[in-house]
Image (cartoon, rainbow, N blue to C red; front, side):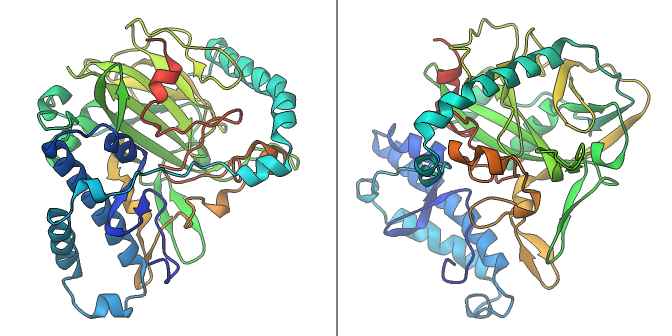
Length: 421
């Protein structure tokens, strides 16, 4: 696919093993395998990751490409091929996986990072103070609530889904959908201008748009390791058509905007904590349930901490109150059903990696994971800090979340750096 100019940035190829791929989570798990059963499970997981990526990449090839015209049942044959190769593989032969980070070392060298990061620290502290104030200042009451489809029943706790050699919560498709539905947040907005309404992502050959007439949250599962446990995470991304510019010199406005809300579950299904970022990787915030989590540090590279405990979505639907235009989350509260509610649908985030365009398919993300259409002017100032095109929307798995130091939203050990053990 690389020769055809198609590459999906969510996972990395493994030299010598074209039927395996890995993300940061699988790279971490590779170091934790010891028994034969664990190694076999890891190979299956890496094979499944490859099948997902290869399927999405193959769909983006021209419909008359030889790889696709040879057989009409290429998906089934791909599955059979990968399954066979995985069964014949030996784990010791797989090289140690090192996932490249999403920072530009070149930019940091050219931008004299050792100096510019010192100059940037006062600005980062000002940003943190401003975000903390937004949590406390009066806010406009929501006038519309986007509510997920109702879920009946109780989804299985992750510990029931972890009975496998690697102790990784592994929901079936049905169990995964039940979990995503049960913990899904309400998005509460105080302004119904079109760019403050979440919608479905669409695209044509040139442009990506957000159709606010179809309220949607794009969801996926992820995992983290914290205090000796492999924990399941539920991710929800809401897209907006733009962040409106506040004048000709606005650094942060531009086409497309989104927020990602992540729920980290304890083994028993209670919520450990929440965190959020915008689709650019900026504005990382953490929200604690009353569970004793203590922040590890409060420096300019740390996440912004929500000041008070928030509801546990295991037993209470959570409302995210979003500030108009900036789409900052300014309150997290227990949702009380009332007037002006509108349903949103949950969609698989993988759909954005190969969307119908004309007679074929195309990802909304460039091969490096970026969406160039969403570029912001702040990139012209922040480039020495090493985040490529700061402010632009980017693909899950490529979110750098710190301008000082190096940290990623999908780092398997992120929570260990955020909270004291």
